Amino acid sequence: MWKLLKIELFKIFKRPRTYIAFGAIAAIVFLIQIALKYDGKSYIDLLLSNLSGSFEFNDDFKDKLLNGYLICFVILNTLLIQMPLLIALISGDAIAGEANMGTLRLAMTKPISRTEYMLVKFTASFIYTLALLVVMALLALFGSMLIFGTNDMVVLRSEGIEQIKNFDVLWRYFAAFGYAAVALTTVSALAFLLSVFAENSIGPIIATMSIVIVFTILSEMNIPIYDETIKPYLFTSHMVAWKGFFYVKANAEGTTINGSIENLPAVLRSLGILIVYIFVFLGTAIWVFRKKDILT
Amino acid sequence: MKKIIILVIFITAALLVKAQTAEEVIAKVKAKLEKVNDYEAKGKMKTNVIFIKAPIANVKVYYKKPNKLRINNESGISFIPKGSMNINLNNIFINTEGFDLIDMGKEDKTAFRIIKLLPKDENSDVVLSTVYVDEQQLLIRKAKTTTKENGTYELEMTYGKYAAWGLADKVNFQFNTKDYKLPKGITFDYDDGSKKKTPSDKIKNKKGQVEIVYSNYIINKGVSDTVFQ
Image 1: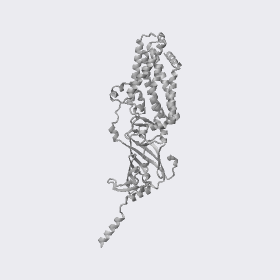
Image 2: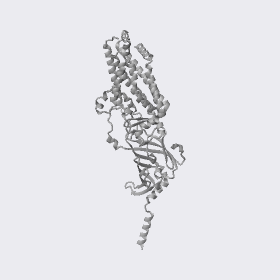
Image 3: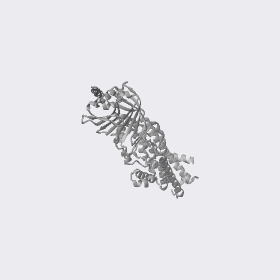
Image 4: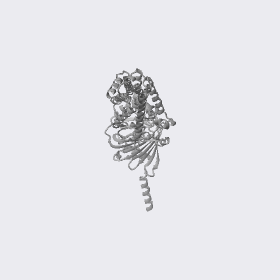
């Protein structure tokens, strides 16, 4: 099985299109960093515009606010919505690509069970997802820390502001990246499932993206009828729970409690829901594939 | 004859110990505050605003005559409210000639002298200032300033070892805050399913509060102008 995994990884990383995703991530991160380095104060002005009547925001404040931790948060906010597309490019191609090339039937003649074959294929997609996330973490977090330095982190929510002390931030990023790995693996598992039904990789990739886009829109809409009926069951509602690590507890006087997470049980519940989704998608994919009449 | 002498003595004594006028009280407090040309003070700043969760900050406060004041968070970020200039009382007393003083008598509970300062210039941003003066120690205990643009500021001071300079050990600064709201389309918040505060809760807490507890002052040792840039 290890040998098969190595072959799958070799196939993934041998293809030039695999690196499009890494290039795209590097480009987006770099462009955001450049933009915020040279015009970050305008961005801060925009974000804090409705507070300018109550507080003084001088250049020193803006320079401190615009630190590596905030920049990384802005990048993650942007990228973790786009990244499912890059994940789907590989996972959606995992089975459908083989079917399209006519190599799936050939692969099934090898002395390996269909379940093992599917697990190896999914593991390879998972490793690709992790690699993409690690590259993003290196560029977005450590790159931004290098360019902008570090300071206290300020998280702007729709109805409030969270301020976290400098020393209390880094572990939250590690936890958030760990969570993001699970969130993106959910998308990978969905694309992998859809890949089983298709004989051309375009279909699963577009279908995955369509599902993610529609679900994301539903997750972000503030319509009461959806809030309790649909939203809690959409995996996209739980994909953004990595932000929960940056929502801190405060005492009665509004002073943040270092090392705290505002609602850890909710974050863990979201994590659990995503893991269930992964198992459901992967289990269904294996079940369908085992019963599939492979003709190509 | 004896009665007349006693009456004269009483009248003379009464005239000698007559209450100070508001102008005299203000002039004495001003004279005390004017002993401070500049200071640098270390302190801990606590911010209490309904929509901000912030840690306690280690700050340095710099002041230089006539009205330069700067609060610096040396190691992190602090949200400094507008009007925080007023935490330095000299700013209230910088131009007492520009105000009409109204003596409002004494506060029942504390016996602090209440004096209202009305600006003579009708274009002044300050609409009204009210100060509560401890006449015995010549210290401002409370001050309330209403402005045209930024609402009302309230100050409460607790004095300790720097009382002789008119400098407080603890300052509580209350100010008006405006609503804070960012579109969800920008923040992409994580909705953890917990109940959010109702609008009525927020309206109740429209006042923000900043408390600075000073640990030490360095007075009249000179503060560079570059600090205030």
